[in-house]
Length: 134
Image (cartoon, rainbow, N blue to C red; front, side, top):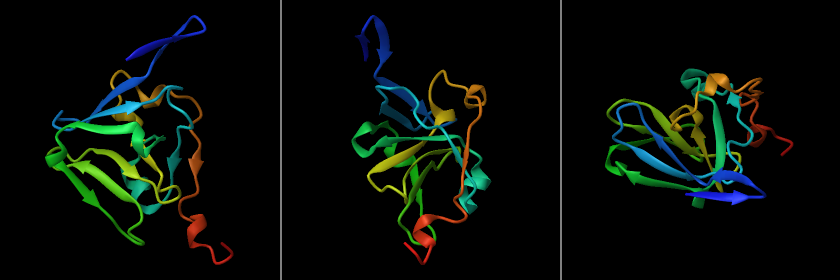
C-alpha cells in the first residue's frame, strides 16, 4: 500500500521474507525503518542482525506460520521467531517492550542493512530488566 503525504510517496506496507521464502511477513512502517540497531546480548551477538521495531499490530504473518519456530531463553519474556526450514531469524517480541516486535531489517524486500550508516549497538548484556535498581 502506498500513500502520498505532502507530495511525498510513502510505502505503508512492507514485505519481509526468510531466506527460503516459506515465511512471509507484512509490516506497517508508515515512517520507514526507525531506530535501526544491533544488540550485544547473547542471542543477538550470534545472529548479528540489524533490527528495528514495529507495534504488535504492525506485523502480520501472511504465509508460512506453520514453518515458524519459537525460541525462548532466560526470562522467557522475549519470543524469537525463525524459519524452521532455512533458520533465518525474522522477528521477535521484545523483552524491553513486549508491546513491540523487533524485526530483521535484512528480511525486508529491497533493503540492504549494510547500507544503513552508523547502526548503533544497544547494551543487551546489561539489560535494564536485569539490574537490581529497576
